[in-house]
Length: 315
Image 1 (tube, rainbow, N blue to C red):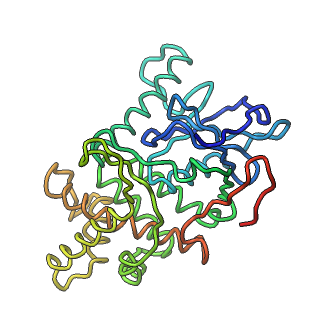
Image 2 (cartoon, one colour; image 1 turned 90 degrees about the horizontal axis):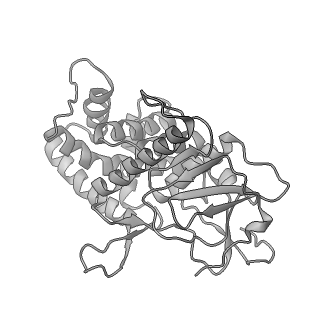
């Protein structure tokens, strides 16, 4: 078991918490964010808390949103920031009281995201926390490393929460538009070959389906890359002289976003199957775009190791 933090040193009067339903493990060890806050996991639920040190101020709501998006990006998982008390953002048609409404809202949201993980990967599979189970504590310098890509991280986090592939594709494509400051086609043309050579890091995926529940280390990003490589071969063969970036923009992006001619219908068959495969390509392009926004040296986020109870080491 990793070293656990001393919660007596931190405030526990939290107002919001982060839910990550498809993340494995009870314990994450001592994990700090921006050298200011403790990221604490409830071992009996999906819930994470961002706790300030005693007598320090809580993170602002904007900071919590940003940290939630960073955790979503780091683990490629749908992640939610939920209220601990009071009203929820969306109320049901019939209100049975604030407490019931809040608890029911949070529960239903997590159930949906848990189902989303099963839909994409198969049942009883999950992602490991990337920075846990260490002998030393870690410091996630999210603000300095990810701050320049905050807008794109928000779009990526939103894409991860989409249940249907058409909506997911559209939100990933918005990242292309953000970094390109245009329709994204030129950026895709210039960067699509990088999918095969970029370092996306190691995201451990617990897969027991093939080996009778025996755990093996699987890199989820490598699976994405294999799917993307196969899809690119299929597209080059099927599209002929039409560029892939033109297909992504004119057929998919515009066909999903607009209600005119060329509408991409959710047909429960061909369109869903095609765009479901395209997502592997556009997802990895999105991660390349975000890595570029982070700047040189930040292609793969590395946590700083801290001796437990000792002084901070330099990154």
